[in-house]
Image (cartoon, rainbow, N blue to C red):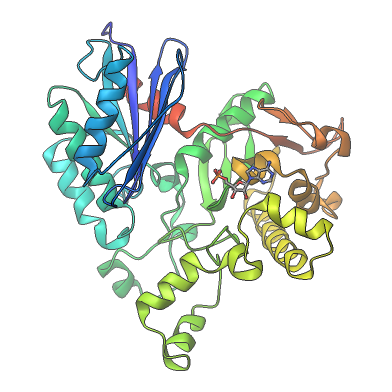
Amino acid sequence: MTSANRVLVLNSGSSSVKYQLLDMRDGSRLAVGLVERIGERVSRLVHTPAEGERRERTAPMAGHEAALKAVAAELAADGLGLDSPELAAIGHRVVHGGLRFTEPTVITDEVLAEVERLVPVAPLHNPANIVGIRTAWALRPDLPQVAVFDTAFHTTMPEHAARYAIDVETADAHRIRRYGFHGTSHAYVSRETARLLGKDPSEVNVIVLHLGNGASASAVAGGRCVDTSMGLTPLEGLVMGTRSGDVDPAVTFHLRRVAGMSVDEIDELLNKRSGLVGLCGDNDMREIRRRIDEGDERARLAFDIYVHRLKKYIGAYCAVLGRVDAVAFTAGVGENAAPVREAAMEGLEQLGLAVDPELNAVRSGEPRLISPAGSRVAVAVVPTDEELEIARQTYSLVNN
Ligand code: AMP
């Protein structure tokens, strides 16, 4: 056991770093912040300590090293510096852990080399995660750096859920299979849902609907993921803010051959200009609801397509699980958009699913049930907390 009880959680993107410093005695935040537009002419840092005013700084930050040094300086100004003996570890969100990383892992040169070998299957995410790790490691070489993988929770998926039905040799040669993402959130929310029901996670089957700007569903049986909607990359599955989710793979051949688009252009179309934004020009569910209330047909159709896909996955995962104890809505849309929850459950009474309009309308940051009393299946809103989950996993690894 160590007396150090703080964990710094870093989520490094290509041009941003999100961070939270947590006190693991009670999971409280000592500071949270964000650096964005790293590498651009002017970068912006927003830092909010638990005790004190929100501070905003703009300055050129050429790379992640400059950004993390700026974060370290802000933390130090609050007496929370990276050199503090109370800091137990740094937990890094790493998007792709492939099949090898099924658990949070203390970073070594060998681990980092393996994360680098996964760059071809996660070209958008892993490089930024690696830069974040290297930079933090250089600042505190003596401190445990822990990687917590978005894919880890999904490594329990059986082969029949994880494999695509394509030529096995080709798939294996290129590590093409369904990995799933948002695993930290699915793990946390499925566990919290069990807690809300007063049960052990091993006793319950849960469908988790993580509906943020990125969105994914998972089927969790007795605490283990048995299926999830994202695949080789986060593009598969539900309709998202800017991603298409499921399309016939032949759409890509068609765009290449008939529309003459390059592979990069198709990638950009399906990842950045599709989903809700592609359908109606907005990816914020609040704005879409506002437009629907004004009678906007495109916004209505985008909403209906979003909900239709969601229903298909709910139905599919009822079939995959056989017995469902709870459906849990989480993330920005899932936690806040009552009309999405209501529409997704509409007509599913035969599956034991329903929402109580009054409970569904309640706004709260707490986990809560929204199904009518006595329902066969509990429908719940369970706020996700990926940073707390990363911090907990990191802390329990270095404290054992
Ligand atoms: P996340 O990726 O989990 O941060 O979710 C971001 C998304 O949540 C936004 O793009 C919005 O579509 C949605 N969102 C956030 N707040 C609300 C709200 N009050 N009502 C409806 N949707 C919301």
